Amino acid sequence: MKAAPLLFGLLALIAWEAVVRAGNVPPYIVPGPVAIVAAFAAGPLSLLTALASTLVVTFIALAVAAVLGALLAFAMSVSRLAQAAIQPWAVVLQVTPIVAIVPLVIIWVGYLVTSPRISTLITLVVSATIVAFFPIFANTAEGLASAPAELGDLFRLYGGGRWQTLALLRLPAALPYFLTGLRISGGLALVGAVVAEFVAGSGGFASGLAYTIQEAGFRLQVPRMFAALVLLSLAGIAINLGLGALARFVLRRRGMA
Amino acid sequence: MLTIRSVGRRFPGGVEALRDVSLRLGAGDFLALLGPSGCGKSTLLRLIAGLDRPDAGSLDWDAGHALAPGDAGFVFQDATLLPWATAEDNVFLPLRLRGMSRPRAMPAVREALAHVGLGGFEKARPRTLSGGMRMRVSIARALVTRPRLLLMDEPFAALDEFTRHKLQADLLALWRELGCTIVFVTHSIYEACFLARRIVLMTPRPGRVAREMASALAHGADTRLDPAYAALVAEVSRSMERALEAG
Image 1 (spheres, rainbow over the protein chains, first blue to last red):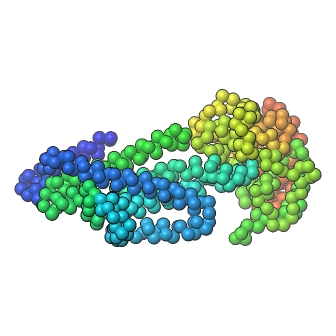
Image 2: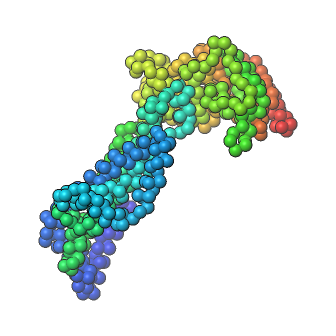
Image 3: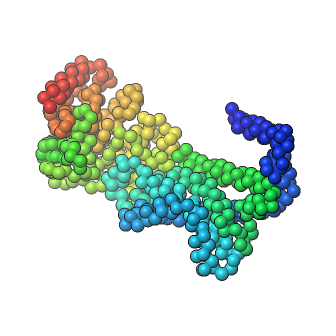
């Protein structure tokens, strides 16, 4: 059972290669897996550098989104005024397509930061952060309100104050929710980074995988496009599995899983 | 210690949980609030705990008996433990909320855990404990402040029968040993008859006290086989049926 997805994937790859060869499909339309691996082998360093550049943006954005999302969720949970003020805007950010926001971000960041290298980096990070922010924010907010009402009663019964309730009950109760949000946002940060790269081009900043895909596309280097795509999806899988493992590790240590 | 005078409670939305409930609670009582779902017994318990306020009537504590934090312990139907905290830390919580340091609290915490038969499980997390053991931790948490009043809201309803019987017997022993007052909410006639000295029958819509009955059951090793216990169960059952028909 465990090997089923691997076996299926392998079969699909073999079938793909067979169809491409049997049908004489030119590699600039659909390359076979072998051609894709060859494209990667032809220039692994440039592809891996591009991957690293995209990952740098992804992880900075994820970290910023984690801090901002958790802080704003926290502010909302301690103040009804903050909740009323923040919540609608969070939803606005969530529902507005990031592709439509990036051009604005480019203009604003370009106005504030003169170095093109740094301004591109900031543009990408800001855009990816906007995408990654919401799941962490929404999950943490839900987690902060997730403790059972009876436990709240218990704290009241023993004269527990607002901050005690927060520190001893609501924050620890929110941790699993935060970690779930972090895992969802990890994948989204990558998506956000790639989308922003597509819109922003690469400016002065070392170019990421989206730029590699675009550039290879212009040159009809379709196998290279596929190789970049495979790297992207492997990176997404690794981020998802890694954050899942982190969540399990933390929760097991806390006796919650 | 407490006189409840014509208390009424109506929730937003119009549900009348309690109407004209009067009751006297004496120090050392073991009182069961018995009734079907929706008869307001949990609401009454929350009023006594000070977690809710009545819309009508009053709860008057005798001089010197008014509750300060820690004077009342509350046990819910679920153990409601902090899942990330050890048994020890869960029992420490009430003392911690009152600002007591860990080293100072530990003797009381250990003693409370030993009282409920959980000596040796101080470092266990709730996940690793059975339902009965979690409930024992919850009772230890309620006992750790040495409360004068123990309020219990169907604490054994979710446990299997064997565990429930053991916990009921242990609770009686604790009550005798500690001499505290217990108000015990239950919808089980058997449980009320086995545990309580006073059984208050409540009927729903709106929640009212239908009748109060006393129990003179002498507790021994075989109480559940005692004809007097069977007779009490039969009498309470009949009274409850009549009360529900009349209501």
